Amino acid sequence: MDSLTGFTVFVTVAEARSFVAAGRALGVSASAVGKSIARLEDKLGVRLFHRSTRSITLTAEGTLFLERSRRILAEIEAAEQELSQAAGAPQGRLRVSLPLVSTLVLPVLSEFMRRHPAVQLDLDFTDRMVDVIDEGFDAVVRTGQPTDSRLSARQVGTFRQVLVAAPDYLARCGTPHAPADLLDHTCLHFRFPHNGKLEAWPLPERDGQVPLQLPASMVCNNIETRVCFALLGRGIAFLPDFSIHNMLADGRLVQVLPGCERSSTFHVLWPASRQPSPKVRALVDFLSEHLFGAVAMGCQQKQKQ
Image (cartoon, rainbow, N blue to C red; front, side):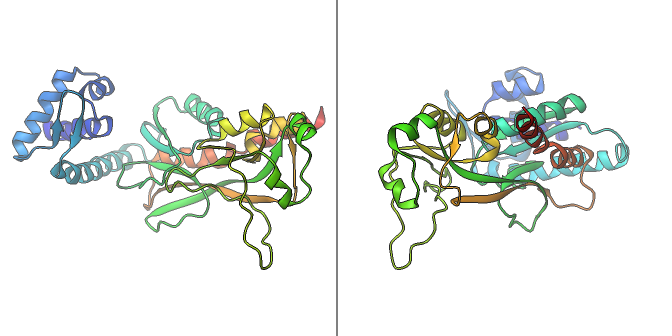
């Protein structure tokens, strides 16, 4: 069991990059964490971390050992769950990677937490393409079509992305009636964090002409900033409808160029196995049932008012 504890401490330190943070997560002192890592390094005969006064980083040997340790702990947890919780309530740490769409997922995850108090959520919000298996995630939520054959996937919802602006902006700057009109407007763009490129707006192709080079009046890497700037009348933004459905319903934002929109999907993905753990199965089922249900309910209520 001492070896198993060493694996757990090592993985926690590697993910937290801090003895203090790891100790806090494990409920022990930073000194106890440091001693556990030292014993593990002595036993293995290699150095797992580079240490400095400001930070710790994995050595090459530590990086290799981290991948194996995660797999060992995952197998042990899966074995325990298959033996003792196959038909039981979900429980244990659930590490989930989610895109930066907090307004959509936070209410749903809060309700999941209320219904499954024995599950400890460990949430990582990022738009980069994480490696679900190598980085030790139990599940991820992402847009688009899954491409990793090592993962199981389930679609949990669809949404549209539309061009919107505030009425006062359109009153001041005019309403675009054709894509080319956007060249004279303030355009609020999204930049993909993994490649630095701007998200392309779904404008129709022009025969024999180069694509429109829209003004990049403001660029950011999240939804909330573009929603805020659009509401304040700073320009036109291309946004997912789930992030602005209330604002469209009450007129604070209006859609422009209705033909220029794009449909997309959300999927939840998890490491493929014949028997997913109860906590992963519970999350997948809950997201499938509730992720877009709250949005649809809100839209229906607005329409009735």
